[in-house]
Image 1: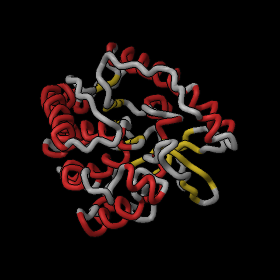
Image 2: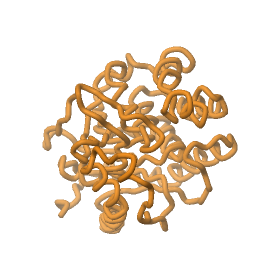
Image 3: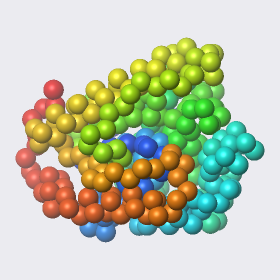
Length: 297
């Protein structure tokens, strides 16, 4: 694991990608517009679906995330109840991180590895209950951290890597804006997957029953809604002050976490494309401007 913080003086623009399961196709739409318009960033910090779909920006594969989701969303080998029952993981490990990556819609690992963009995936250490920010340097060797980042509680096995046990990074840090601020980036773009009026409510899921061996994880999970809503407040504050840019869905599309309706998958992607195109000039000016926002406080 390479859980590092880059040199504060060496980087300029950070891209923060929220998770949200299949709502992450909104982010895929935004990133495809970024690639088509040569929008460049220095670092990406992705959570869950934000990490899983965001890697295609670094590998320069426009349309890949949408393409394979539309093709395989209704395939029982991909993700869903069949995979959960047969493997213990709602997201099928062999299909998603072997067949899909290397055979069915190959991930361009060579291009990814050559890119100078730093890419971090957020994972939650279930023993400490804390977020870890793992640099995904090698698109092949580090795939397990990407899998861990998207392994949702209750429907995923714990992912063990080098003796540590992980689950979905969204439990500990769903929108890692604070991490980007701590890294000292001059400019930050946040891609959210929930509408502007969304706020998280307290979860009544039985964390204490299922994860009783991991008390710190339980504490983190039970307070996750507080952390999430505080981050939303921070995003609004800095956005209003012009210190960051945030994009979030301008239209409400009701979706399941494991959505199989192809029209809905296409629709949320299309909203991402539309919202990014609408704000494209603003984003370009923000990145290209020599004016550095005041120190984040």
